[in-house]
Length: 488
Ligand SMILES: Cc1cc2nc3c(=O)[nH]c(=O)nc-3n(C[C@H](O)[C@H](O)[C@H](O)COP(=O)(O)OP(=O)(O)OC[C@H]3O[C@@H](n4cnc5c(N)ncnc54)[C@H](O)[C@@H]3O)c2cc1C
Image 1 (tube, rainbow, N blue to C red):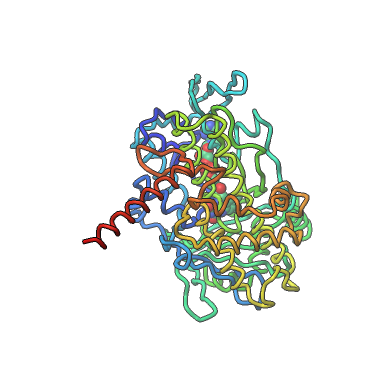
Image 2: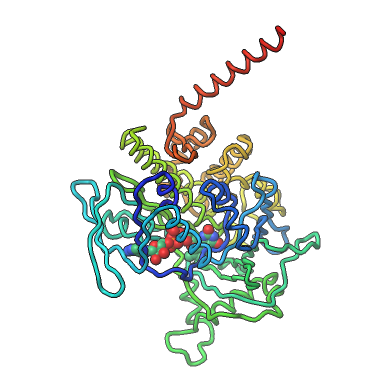
């Protein structure tokens, strides 16, 4: 996405991709925030034509017996929906479109190192599958290398893991499943479905896809995963129970999902993912930006990965384009990207941590400040943050709702939810008292006085004063028109 955005601005972009697309990837459920980005770059019609499942929201069964939390995108987003995608197809679409927009795309080409001169990266070393290698000089580098996070893990050494979310995910695909039926009896086609495991040891996702299969994964802490390896019958396997046994054991502890899969058949071997949450100390510096999983990763409970990746791509592209056009100095550009991503990450980290608190304590209702048996109220409050709309769709969200959502998040932090006040992210919030400063600045999505100007040919960062000036001029013009209308 970063390559698409910059190529469309007429920048010279080279994209080096280690694999050959299409290639398998996890991360199939998107938030509504993807829609304005896809529309902005001109990919929305292709997404529609491709036939991906339209996602109108999701159901979250946090506690057996309590009505599930329901996220209804129609309530919070002007876009009304997002998609559940087969990532190999979605990612391929993006890669091909980057080339169409003018980026030079090289697949099967891994970046093996990045050389710095002083504090600025100046060249990448690459190695192609099949032998050839070389170097590439640049003005800016965007590291979008995902989990492997080349700059963060090999050069800057600034990735910090969050032990509370040291999870493992185990998943596969099913066909012939039954759709989720909501408590009011209506089948929920295309919805994301989440269910806490009955013993509080984790949770499970169910994502219907357009090839007729459903992605189903179990997430649990790595300690629990290791415990199950020895606790479950091994059937002669060396090194403990195999991952399929652990996976099926997880499904057994999710009665709704178990029913949905009663007549279904598993279509692929079970896979595992290391699902540790982490965050880099810094996401940008002179000449570089980190985006997506290369910058930070938060547990997939609310399907935030692609949202954060797109947000990072937009912020990196805008801060680089703005800088190259001389609209702002390097410090301001770096500061913007850093704060923009951190704000989004902290919002999600806090809310996910609150939800985990409930997932782990199945015997009682622990979500702070919420009616004893009903999680619907909680979901109404945190909806804009979870749907990603608070980061990318300022106009569509009522500022009061965001205010309430943030207060809710802060209450959870003060409650010392899983994240605890020892966590730097939580401390940041507590110290500032609130993050209202960032979330309610004018115009809506300003960060540190700058906001992203989503205009083709002028993609960049604009200062809040610029918007105020435009608003004042608009107001003046309206007044003048009114005067003319009244006097005539
Ligand atoms: C179990 C699980 C479930 C998830 N579910 C969801 C979900 O439902 N919704 C959601 O939005 N997110 C989900 N995520 C998160 C999501 O997968 C990621 O956040 C998202 O894919 C990040 O995108 P990215 O572009 O940063 O990285 P990636 O999609 O991983 O892309 C990185 C690319 O960089 C390439 N690369 C790596 N190293 C190099 C190198 N040295 N040189 C050149 N190329 C390189 C890789 O080949 C890859 O193509 C989930 C994650 C997990 C673990």
